[in-house]
Length: 380
Ligand code: NAD
Ligand code: ZN
Ligand code: ZN
Image 1 (cartoon, rainbow, N blue to C red):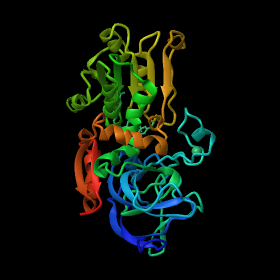
Image 2 (cartoon, rainbow, N blue to C red; image 1 turned 45 degrees about the vertical axis):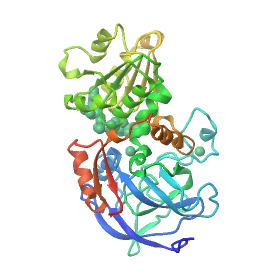
Image 3 (cartoon, helix red, strand yellow; image 1 turned 30 degrees about the vertical axis):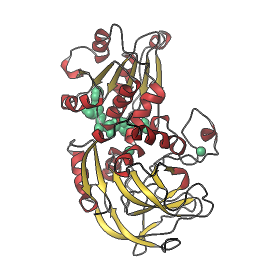
Image 4 (tube, helix red, strand yellow; image 1 turned 180 degrees about the horizontal axis):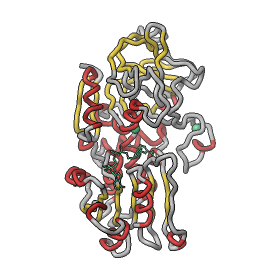
């Protein structure tokens, strides 16, 4: 047994002291895991837009000092009381939303929206005692979405930890903790395009590219990428996108452009933009009789979805999904296996790698729109 079990660990963490200010690598104290918690040694983490939004804290409640980070791969260092399904040494992916296994959602085959551990961006503490496990000189440092992976060690609820194949390279599969599974699952689990079908993907950021990867894996014949930024198109080709539409290049609604291209509409569409206009277009561009549209993007607070009800009567279906409908603990191991058996390609999502001391570079790449995923290596 490691000598750190039950002890406070001092380690490096990238602390956000103030909104929008560069993270500072600090020595922090990480308390041992309490009941139903595990302490993880993080080996690789990656940056997602959600970290950046909450770090900028423009529309969100500011909560600082805070340790961000929610896509990561690591190894269990120690487990708290009552934890039986994980042990020190297990290879794991922490996830921002959990699976308690007991609630109605966890018991439903259809849902992944756990009552107990569903994402909560306003909570900066552990649910068991309302306290943080991070501190510096006695000052508590807040958690982020229950994961806080920009730290060499972190404490996570056991329901937010997926145990995976120890042979899987953590520097690649760490990206499955959030964005990539969100897009991939939106297509594979929710849109379910038949082989040979046509799929429109709205928004070619990390999530949209993962949705396209899902369409490629499903064997879709036509994968139409829709983005306002044509510079996204070249990269998207690697993800199986084989046709492109920029709504700005046309003087009619993009749903009409797509209907003309596809003899009445696509079989499936997946919206990964967060734009309400794109959401409506994604729905209205599916074929009547069988078309299914899936919304993934997070809209603005005051947005409202407006379409004519006859679009539904004509047998179009509109769905939405959270985290690609994956249940973190039950389903992530099999997504990792998809990568291991070369069905799913992850390398093409990884555009940059930096060391932990250079973590602010990862923010720069994302803010400049240069990266899909930047991996942060915790050990030099
Ligand atoms: P991103 O900003 O990297 O990519 C979005 C892309 O959409 C950009 O390329 C942009 O040019 C394009 N776009 C914007 N408006 C458009 C429009 N009207 N028509 C066509 N293209 C348009 O974002 P991302 O990280 O890929 O995330 C995409 C969305 O998914 C965000 O809204 C994010 O909050 C959301 N998300 C949802 C979940 C979930 O579980 N539902 C999880 C993670 C992220
Ligand atoms: Zn649950
Ligand atoms: Zn994310």
